[in-house]
Image (cartoon, rainbow, N blue to C red):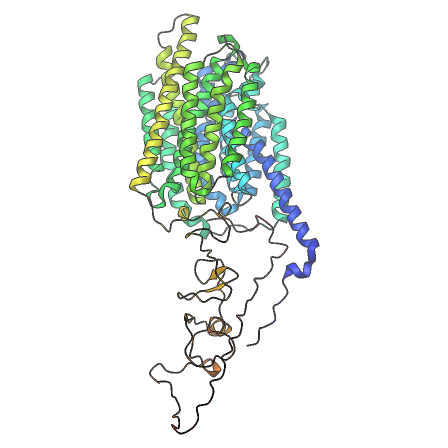
Length: 613
């Protein structure tokens, strides 16, 4: 059997220069993307806190402080409503254009904030801040999804650190200011730097040859993700209604109902197993407790309440950020099978951080904040990294759609607890004691909620394990084991070259073809006729002409690719009993034909594959 000549691929024609150039572009893209994540996520999360009350004394006399507080708080409800739509939109227009669009909205709102003079304009600008942040968070997640696994871990660590420091970062520019408009443009220079990085990322993304997702990629995720708009709209409505003199008990009940609804939606992915529900549970738990807890701790530790002030908090924030990055990097090095336990362990560490808040805070010095901040940031980073490591893209987007509603529900619950504790405060000292008591009670409630999430995830993982064929049951393309023996789910089983599998696959180069491997090698006759005849494990008796059956197709194939009818028996010539038996010719079996796979082209750089479904 003649082996057809192998056509040279683009990689061979281009030579090593093209491949090096493609690798260099891909590496630059990863570096720029990492810097972009480190800058963009803090900018998006810092838009959440409502800090206008800190500079309320600077407002004009004709402006109502209550109305201004209400308008300034529209950013988080806008994020809540934008996130589910953005989670669907990012799979149609891709991440790079959405990052540029989100940062453009933030930059425009920052620039226009210097000219705001009415409550209506402040509300509009805060809504733009919320929409821009709602676009940036899912866009950055999808940008790192198809790249190096370390970038996904970096995204989780940056989100955890941003949640921890968002309140302090929002208050930092307000120190000794003479204009209330600073609350609308806290970091304009950082927004400009992020825009430059986003433009560079867009250019590299286009040069790297990323392809846009077709409409078919959106249909699968659109249904369940858009359902998150319903509870998101409900939580946003409750948040706006709570500003109209609701009682503390009513606010607490509304917040608890919101958390229950979010957990019910997180549990809706029963068919996708524990790995499909893990990111939703982690996002809800982290969103409910981390930022509301950090906000209350920041206010309690301000200089006016006996704490070290913002200047004494930065060392604890810096150490917690480093710990979050290291924890995410170490978690990324673990195997995929360990991710469920890692996610639960991260949430347990978050509970430990809440216990440390209740036991050690408030403190007159900033060193006492290192332990609770480190536990909160490190635990959240580990939980998010582990949950996103073992899930499909659709599950990650649904979980992210529940994140901002969980943050808003946490703020509602914490505000209700604060109002209940401050109701009877008549003196400055009683006010301080009320803030401390509210912080301790909130830490207890938040720890209980996280424990409920851990138990719920464990129970459902045992009762509803999910379908074996779900995307989450398969190894992650970016982190799966690629060794020759990768277990039953990988489809990689070592065998001698050319061995024929009884099921019809051909094993070549230690990889079984025709099963669940990445490439199926078929004979030329099958490629010409479009048919597929499974190879037999044992060839029929008789001389073997050409190559073995594994390389040439099934037995019985005749000349002209016509097979003998099945009902016609094999004709054996009669032998003369007096004639001497002729020596049986020696059977010569040709070696198997091994066709090497085509070499990669220079355009197919690392991480330049299609977006994971």
